[in-house]
Image (cartoon, rainbow, N blue to C red):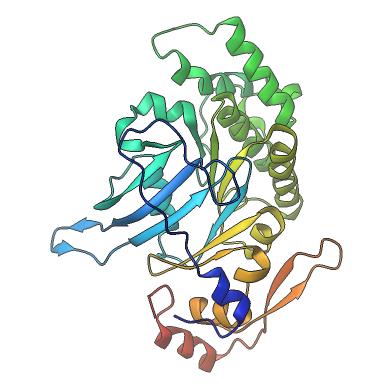
Length: 316
């Protein structure tokens, strides 16, 4: 697919560099002297079904994440966003290609080692477990000493710091079932921070939140990044949230990278119309200067039929 606009075309350039030797502990440097925290190198994956193999959920995926940046992964349903997270966290194994974390293949890391480096805030709201906020957050310390039954003074200090950072310290003794959706989401993020990860991964963190809590969640991610240097990989269907929060966006389509770059380059009207199968208008937020994506609201049978014929989520 070739976007009609120069900015989007430039955004489609994916970094090509030699692969690290397997097991090399030294992180590589990017072209601007920045370390590479995560590297996907030609990663492909297809789900197995009883009748055979489905089309690739991800194909030849290559991109990098630098320490201290917020990168957003966007795209239609079934474009590979959740699969990407599962591969990074070794819930799934690539059919081909390599994923490196701090220069080391994730295949060489134990589950515990990986949990010390990558923390995931899953999609959806936690079930009604009979835990308090403080107990939930302390669970994030488990990877640091999985054989210990009781928390150490350092565990309690790290958990307290995580709750302070997310604004839930005053709720430490509150049962989870008594929290609002926004409060519970902040508690889950606090648990992830208690892991002291190199990378914080969030899968649709605002999916079940109202406008107020969406804004609070976005502000929290920006503050954690600014004050703590937290590196964030954010998967979201909300293009405007991703545009406001993220330094770069990775747009997926049919399991491939359609574009990667600054929000201003990736959120291109022609490119988004091609990927999502509907016309959009991209304006600028007058307050922040970031892109804002709006539907044209020409929602009728002809538009719906056009989107269906284009096969939204498929590779053009």
